Every structure is written in C-alpha cells, then in structure tokens.
View 1 (cartoon, rainbow over the protein chains, first blue to last red):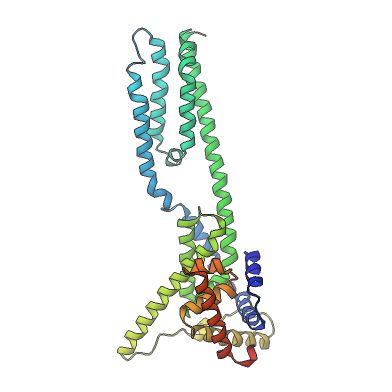
View 2 (cartoon, rainbow over the protein chains, first blue to last red; view 1 turned 135 degrees about the vertical axis):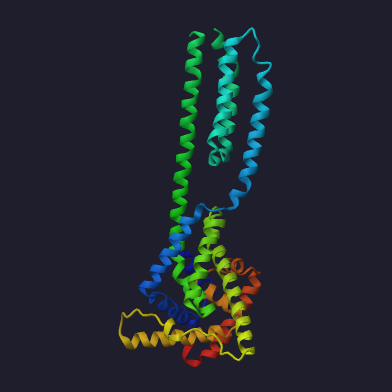
Length: 141
Length: 210
C-alpha cells in the first residue's frame, strides 16, 4: 500500500501545498487516540470473522450441487442395469457398492465445499474409467 | 486374488485414496483461505486509520465514520475478498466513498427538515470530536489540531467529487486509475476534480499554506 501511495505521489509531481496538506492529514492520522484505534481493530476483526457469510459463491452453490447430483445420477444410474448381469455376479458386487458409496458420500455429507471442487469430480470420473475394465477383470480373475 | 479379496481390497483402498485426496484438497483450501485472510487483515490494517479520517472529514462525525469504515470492511470481505489483491484498495474506497455520499445526502435532508421546523442544524460536537491523545508538546498539538481543523473546514466546503478526488489522491495516495475506479468516473474527471480542488483549497487556505 505504501508503495502505491508513493507511486501515486511521484506521478502527481506535486508542489509544497499538496505536501503540506498531506502532512497535516498524516499527523491527524497519527494522533488518533487509543480508544479509536481499538475500535478500528475490533471492527476489522469483526469484518474478517463474518467472512463466512453469504457471498457471491453462496449463490451458485445450490445450482452447482443440483447440477453435480444430476450428472452423477445420469452417469451412474443407467449403467447399473447392463453392468449387473446374472452371469457376472462378482463384477456386480465389485462395482455397485462403490457407485452407491460415491452417491452416498455426496448425499450424506452434504459438504458444499467438496461439491464446489469440480476438480475432485474430474479425478473421480477418470478414476472410474481407469478402474472399469481392469478392476472388473481382476475381480473375475 | 480371489473375488472376495478383490471386493474387500478394492473399495477399501479406493476409499482411502479418495479420502486422502479429498482431505488434501480441504487442507490446501484451508491454507489458501488462511493466507487470504491474513492478506485481507494486513490490507485493512494498512488503510483503516486513513480511511477513518477520510470518512470523518466527509461526514463530520467520527462515530458515523467508524460505522461507515466497518461497513466498507464487511462489504469488502464478504463480497470482494476473492478479487485480485490489487483491486482491494479501489474497491474498498469505492464502497467507503459511496457510503460517505449517502451519509452526506441523509445529513443534508435531515438538516433541511430540521430547518423547516426551526431546529438548529445537527452539526458535530467539536469537543466530542477532538482527539484525546496527549503526546507531544501542547503547543505543537494545538497547532496541529488548528491546522487540520482549518484544512478540514476548507475541504468540507468543496463539492463532494472534488473533496473525494483530493482526499483519495493526496491523502490516500491512490493513483489516477485507482482513484477513478474508487470514484466510479473517468481518469479525466479525476484530474479535473483534483485540479479544481487544489485550486479552491489554495484560495481558501490563503498564502500561508502555499
């Protein structure tokens, strides 16, 4: 902040008048009493403590939550029917609980911070793709 | 590996891995949030005293100025904390300037209404306003107070935009671009307001200030 102040001052190429008015102002700032400084300190801490209040992020979280749940439902739900054939019971056992667990995590934790981490879901999706064939064959083998 | 082993190991291992990844995300986010809070705290601590004095000159009342500064802090932290740090100063002073303007309008209306009913204007109490800090020689302090009181009176006589331009540029040290952002006007307007303010102040304060 101080650098910015000095930059601004240099840029103005000001004279003695501006210098004098600023000095008077700075002296009045330095002369603020302890009670006022304490009030400022408390005001700042209160503002920072209230940081968790509704902000711009809060507005899109319900939408993001609904969108993520919808994507998960679409991604997981239809695949269960063809991927749980009677002939491959072990594959069904290996896959279905994980998917159920994933949905359970999302539904039960209701952790909005986690839902905001789209990167986590991208990873989870990649993990799912990676796991698909080898995991199934491994289970069968 | 038997089917049972696969069932037992695969979900468990993945769950642990996922858990670690998720907790890693959380702790990383927690560290980032803490760092941001520290930067915000440092920023606000760096501007709060000058902001209070600027608001006090604008409103003529320290208690009201304190409320406006706190309001601006809350607004900045709640709404704009995620914006780049370089934008905090113009954003903070834009919020504060708007609050001061609203306060000035309310005061004008209140004074007008009071004058209709024959009441005297609700000006600030100079005794209550006087700082009670008592460091330095009494003569120097008295001179400093008188000097600042004269300057404040001259500043209060300026149109609001000139007052803002002069205080943001000269007292807070914002550059033209950031002052324009704080005032919500063009850089050309800032230069015009500032130049007129300086000219008017020189004329009002007299030869001794030049």
